[in-house]
Length: 200
Image 1 (cartoon, rainbow, N blue to C red):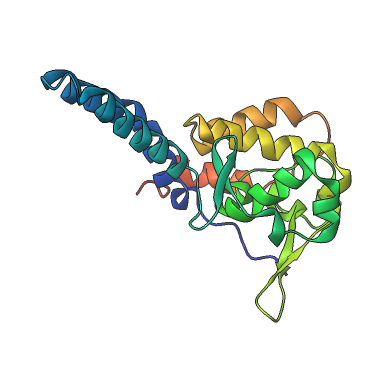
Image 2: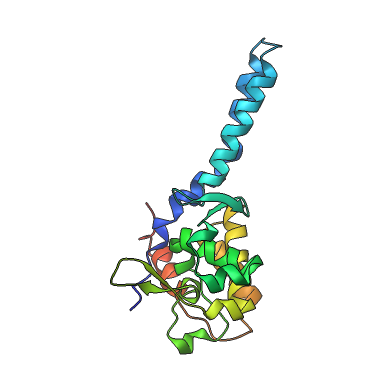
């Protein structure tokens, strides 16, 4: 049994952190320019660049994962089932991203027709639930479905660019809405935002 999607407000703070990166970078650069440390400037610039990259990858991430796909953290390949590791490429990347970005993908619909399989979001195309042992049970549906994989990559690419959940959903609806029926999970997200309940 799949649990209900978390409200978009759960993911919003991470998205807001990503959108603040440019402001933080500007402040760092202003501070560095104000210093008269000609020999130290390269070191300070390197520190500022490293801090900025850390902030960018923290915007859409989960703790303990490696940043390597769209600049976002993804679960290690070693944690994936054999079928996913064998598939490789964009498919394996999508599974790895799904593990670390559950809140966002629970709020993004899928349009491949998997609603008839009981899927309620793009996340369900990858994760079937939790086993009695507390480990994830992977759904192998997305291994053979380019629509699921493309939606995941598009959603997380947009997330890495600082787009909000409603903006990501609008893009996904526009790109994939004619392919098949929506799993419908995001109607709830928009209702939450429209009533103001999604605000922190």
